[in-house]
Length: 162
Image (cartoon, helix red, strand yellow):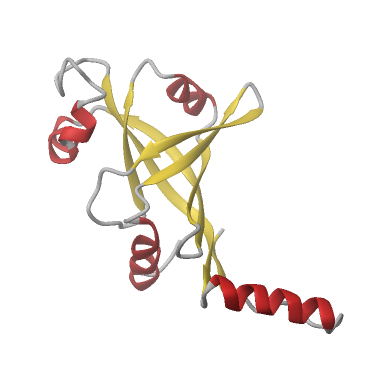
């Protein structure tokens, strides 16, 4: 797990990206699909709307272990989060997170019996954040190639949990 300060750091990195790639196991084979964050804060749990009848629901019922990855190449931010997935039809949470973007995917509205939330309780992860511009990163790579015993210093990398 991570501290409240670290959770805020992770949230700051992913909140504007909004869409993460959710990886589940489909008969033992990793499968990724985009999922859109619906919450306004992060406390160690991520929430995504889904159809109860979606393949990812059946995949997570068979194996709750999932991975989510977020990336923003412009900002040099990359985040990988691993945890356990669980399906919920908690009406209070559905009401809380319902919005026009989600409504576009669920034409029968939030009372559709196929509407559910996928809850991901994050257990561990890793993130990378470039500290400088792309030009500086290219300079670091070129310098490492010239100096043969040096490695490029492209920014921050941190693992947590596990």
